[in-house]
Image 1 (spheres, rainbow, N blue to C red):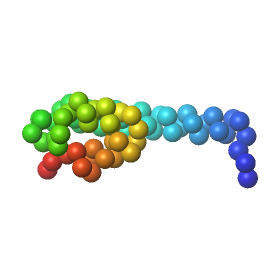
Image 2: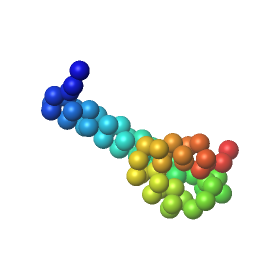
Image 3: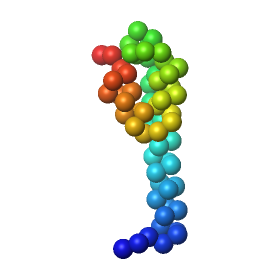
Length: 66
C-alpha cells in the first residue's frame, strides 16, 4: 500500500520533530556534563549528536562515562 503525498509529508514532519527533540536532549546533556564524564571532545559529540538520531544514540551508548 503506497502512501499519498499528504501521508509522506506527515511522516517527514514527525521524523523531523523526533530528531529535533532527541538532538536537543543530547546537546543539553553534553552541555551540563563535566568534560571528564564525556569520552572525547564535547564539541565533537555536540556535532555528532545534532546531525542525526544515530549520532545521538552513539553518544548515549559510547560517549558518556558513568
